Length: 171
Image (tube, rainbow, N blue to C red; front, side):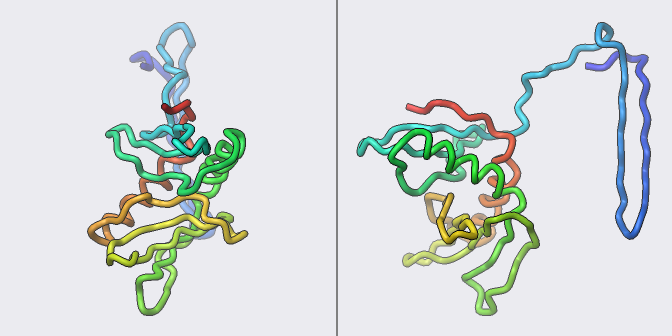
């Protein structure tokens, strides 16, 4: 909560077809409140042990929906955490490829070591999975969607929320 009297500066630059907007606010620390424990995501990663004594992770949105999961179990908690860290670092910049289209075209540009694949399952439901460039599936939607649009919204939520999501112990 910045005080009413604070320094505020806006800078706009345009160079080589790129526009940059920089906003800067400054005030004395004792004059305004700063919340430092704010989450940068509307989701939380949960690491848990399943009934088969395998470790898994899931990304749970604040609304309670599971928006991504590990798909497979890991032999150790450490391996599950490594898997979710790979999702955190790769999901935000991943390409999106629509495998359900006839032309197999790239839907959205990206730039990470993983690709979101949109596809239809055997029941005709829309799904997505996140495949690392080593071929491994590092995340999936865990459920079929009624439409491709809903699947795209789901993967977009993962792209938006994965990087800043805190990690908690699940049940």
